[in-house]
Image (cartoon, rainbow, N blue to C red; front, side, top):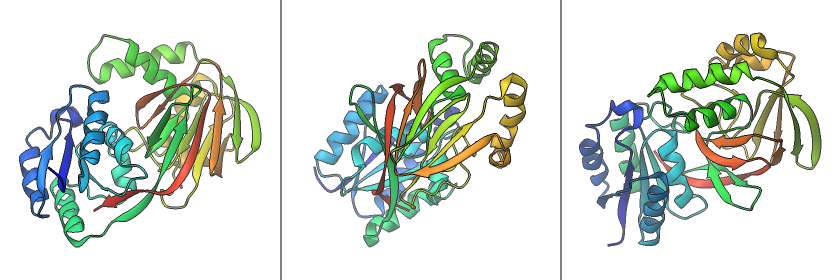
Length: 298
């Protein structure tokens, strides 16, 4: 079957609060005049394989129903390809969707995808392409974390208890206990910067983690990546700075530096990078901005 809409849905996204959303989304997407195929997957890897198979079978569009993690999985199949991509925001964090102008209301987002597909129009947005220490390639839409937040994610993923958001909160406390500035070498378009820091991130979009505006001026259509790092802060100042991330006002702190580049390389010992909240792998990592890499339907 060709010329269909492939839907990758995460029923547990947003802690299940949109669990009954899918039938309405499918009905709305069907008004574009294409068959709608719901992809089945039991893991993130299976989700990516299902999306790639759908694109290979001639899908007119791939639609991610969920949060940034679901978007991240689907992007691996559509980045740099002549296939439309739609997002129905239904996650705890919908940072990519927010940055590219997708409506907050899931049904309005689905209806917009159908209209765009029916009218044959799309919007081009940049994506970030990564290359790891062993040459593995990935794409991300929002933010790559390579500092304290990456350490917290890595610890939380190793923990079995407690369940839910409490595990992440505990991981923060445990990482604060062992907090130390690490030595980084960051190369921006060939210019090398060496510094000690606890916060390092690269952004194609402004926010991550459900509205944490780590790079408040990042624009996913300017052909550039924003890079942020902060001078060593210590536990107390780091915790004081954290609430300001929600507003993006942390960049006014004189200890915080924001730069822009097309090509970024980050190297440090003992850090596993996370992009769109998903594990990439240990540093070093190279990141490139690829202008217009995704054809967004909205």
